[in-house]
Length: 268
Length: 272
Image 1 (tube, rainbow over the protein chains, first blue to last red):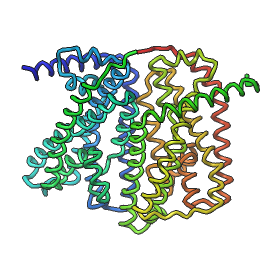
Image 2: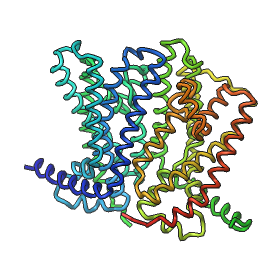
Image 3: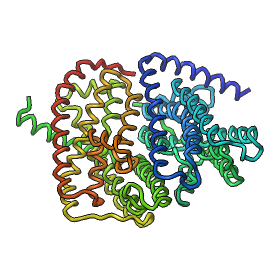
Image 4: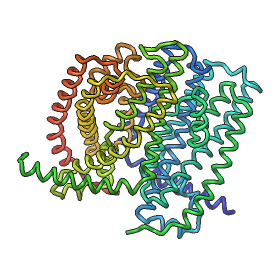
């Protein structure tokens, strides 16, 4: 089976990357403190906003906690798997090491997306789930269609869509590196953009909402699981999430194919 | 020792680096485009959040929906003007070991980092000003820009950029000891976000947090020049602002020299 082979190679890469990362022990403590501070700042920014009002665009502060939780959980994938792997891809393209990748009998794109996971980021996933649980328990879920199990099922489905959306979108943009050679800047910019999406796109004006669903769909990705968990998920959101996930998956695959064909091996 | 001859050669080297960097920048247009989108997006997100709050309450911390929009759009330009990359660039050079070659050259490595930033800034600010003007119409922004504030900004903005560069560089030197600073760098930027006036004007913060913000250099490099340009500072505040910025630049410059020397000694040239 082809897919199985890819999965085994990706797992092996993940293991190697994890042991490399675990060599920098002091980084763990910095990392732990860092995650706690990030969470603190997120909660502080919500507190600052809700000092002045009880509701922003129909979202209460408890609902916002759920959004922050999703932001953390999805961030674990964005930063911990996609970004770090793409950073390696971009560096390999610039140095020409990507040549070796293409020579190996394994799907290069599948490996590129997950080749260098950062194990510390699993902490973000745990923290995200805790924050979501806290927000949901304060906000109450009974209002959601299908009750609590229905809402959780919908949230898991939407979260899967969200992971596909960000992974495909990041790959799509990182593929630009095949043309421009310099790609670290793009990844940093994407990171920076993701970092500020701790707000549901529903509170934004129409144009911005549309932009954060299509041009930079990470806004949609953070919002839809949170909508499912706060009883706000409607058919439009589900459709948007599914459509974007499918479209981006296809687009990233097509662009990757074209890009690899164009790759010349810029090695020195 | 700083001698006139060394100053001259540093300036000459810096200008050459600047020319080189300008040319390099124009090659990487995709990068420039995406960074522009990123900085606009961040500002527009916070602008929208605070506008929604002000619309619900009428006025928040003395800001109406229109003046919030004005604040954030001016901040867009100020932020770009004062931005520095040293926490990324220097840390990257240290981790990859590329700093070793730079240390061998007769030009201080900071000079090249500065040249890169100035080159990027000239192009990005030119790009962002028209975008800010268009967004000002979209968000119905209102700014009370007085002529004397504009004159004052000619002094305040370069000073703010200098202080930001010095503080950032001091912070970046941590990488010489720690090799990887990803963790603490993120924290550094979060403090900057919250206390620099980037997430919100510091007037909407609770008093105790506002006091902390005033005691740190970040507000003076970002929030203060912005408030000056949107007409929230009086002439008296200008002298205070300039004095604070000069004090910070003298203090950080004094620490930077010995810190650089100590940290280059700690530098191990790890390489990848």
